[in-house]
Amino acid sequence: MMVTLERLRLEIRGLDEAELERWIAASLVRAEGAAGARLFEDIDVARIRLIYELRHELEIEEPALPVVLSLMDQLYDLRRRGAQLNAALADLPADVRQAILRRLG
Amino acid sequence: MADDPYKTLGVEKTASAEQIRAAYRKLAKRHHPDLNPGNKAAEEAFKKVSAANDLLSDPEKRGRYDRGEIDATGAERERPRTYRNYAESGRGERYAHAGAGFGGGFADEGFEDLFANIFEQRGGRGGPVRGQDARYVLQASFLDAVNGATSRLTLPDGQTLDVKIPPGTQEGDVLRLRGRGQPGLNGGPPGDALIEIHITPHPFYRREGQDIFLDLPVSLSEAVLGAKVTVPTPRGPVAMTLKPHTDGGTELRLRGRGVPAHGKLPAGDLYVTLRVVIGPMDEKLESFLRTWAQPGFNPRAGMGGAE
Image (cartoon, rainbow over all chains, first blue to last red; front, side, top):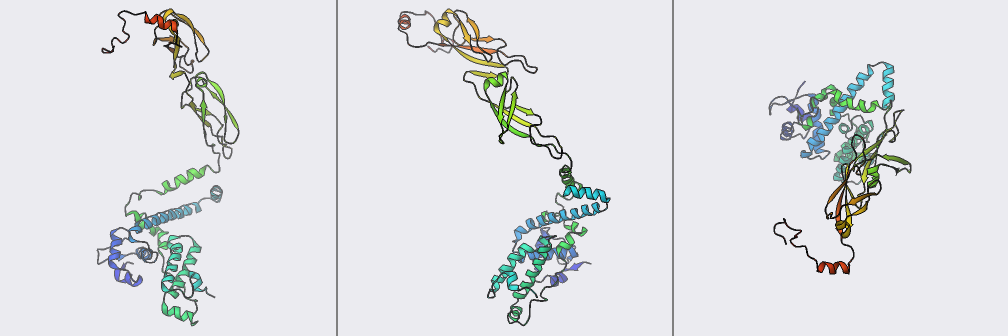
């Protein structure tokens, strides 16, 4: 289900539309539709809330946002891939899993 | 019994709104759950800090808490699904490397690339691994490098290593002593010792490849009248006959007296350049030279009119 800007502003109080458009323009957030008729997925909403908190509660200045988000995205990439690896390992025979665990240990 | 929100934020009961705000921000930076994925302790800490901030940042709630009308219980509210919940699922692909701009150069980097390296490096941990090579520098004398020698190297750990310097060793040559490097792991073979040779220059020999060059001082009478002289060579002195009237600057070659043959290289030659040395002042020589002339002889003829 897509979320409209009106709905988004109810969820994240204090969110400024011009600020959000800057984040979209800087490719920090994805959105469907043109400016003025934006639609967001759940993950976009969560990301906007995070960026809002980074910016206004954790005092990260706007020019530093791409750096912080890039590092964070890389961290999540690794964690996603780690989870995939974990799932793949879970399908292996028990003795192979044990052998891998011993080596990692 | 809920924690005291003042203690949670580490502020005094009399703290100003600004102090509370600053304390909250400081703690939120450290414990924000989206910046600490997988860290349960950070998540719990952040919940408490948020709850404490919710209570104390609202003047009305803070007043009621201070008057004992409410306690901190129930102040914790569930956060909506945080970014982390999405980012760690498959949905997170939507923002893979997004911070660097969508469609940045990483999109094609596969799963295999990422873990291939890890497995390659980890792979050795159970199996045998060859030890590391150890690198040393050995200062050799000119003649040891030419003729070959065995030199003793004292290692940093106090052990010694006998290094066989082969004949004809050149500056910067690296000798490899198999198995004398760091020990291997899990039954792997040890590494090698790599010894770089630095050669101390000689006071009178110079070397170019297989050949050696030497300036040989001779006296005036040896040069004019001829003589049998002794020439030092890298493998001991040899006798050499100077014909009468062998001028200063003459280059004589002693075949096979340079660097000895080694590998596929034949022995080099020793080139001897004569240098006439007048020696101490001599009355008789001087008085003779005052009465002596060499008609028509100009040693600088051919140097463009120099007299």
